[in-house]
Image 1 (cartoon, helix red, strand yellow):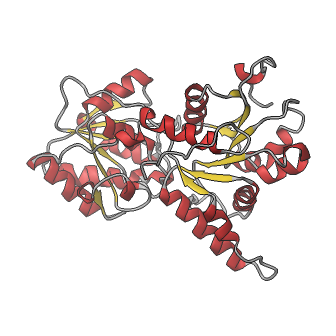
Image 2: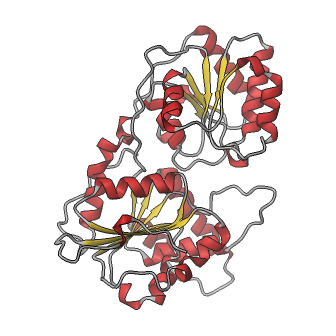
Image 3: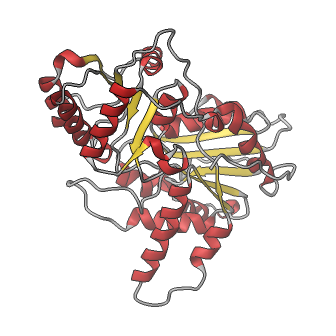
Length: 375
């Protein structure tokens, strides 16, 4: 059953423009974005429809069916849909929505998402996002990497079609693409920072490459470098092999280990000296941005979205464990570089950007130019 929310029943006497928020996969950053958008943009009379963040393959193709009889009767002035929504099918099933201005928000794209060894490459999610992009009036991306990999993926997909490929598809998508990140709330620094505390605050899953992080930490310890570890982030109930190995190899160095409540999590971010990423998939990297907002120095692969966010001094060659170990050793024994300014990604900075984009949609109200996003 579709999730409901307090915004499901619209006050018909409300004079604000009606807007729908459609999020077909409420999980992690998708949920944070949806909650923030409704709270920060009260100029609209919002109606929210969401589906739980599980059963990905069914969800990305099945959401129009799940919502077949759930859409409000009142016509919206604007639709904001996440890119998990099969927008083209949804509008086809509900012809009354064909002319409603629609913003299509990309938290991720299915052209640049690495598959695990248990997954097969499938065409369906990519076609959903291609048709959704064509059906929308504007495409919003949380990073230039997300946008560029989507457009490059579309070009590659069209090149595989055997015949009857229309001209200018990618250019049509380019012309309506805009950068607008998911905002973060800044995390305050602790009164006393631990200069030897190394933070891992990512999901313990294949696309974050935790095994590379573990390999680097073990090598760093073997070199006699003093450090402590805060191992945060979502993990399965049974510890993944990388986490189990780290617990066995360096138990005395681990000072925090678990998916902590929000307040405790933010405390650990505020204490950390260095935050490390070994990801091979990252479209915006909210966890690293939050850590950087607390004053932790980010150490990230020189790839993905990170080049848009952090200076070269904070980046190492992707997948190069030796380079990661060398940089950590230098920082932990010789001093840290200065903190990175991530204030352009703060909620206070991005609320006006989002307001401008929403207002600029035809029929949504005034049409001011949207302020520039930080990327």
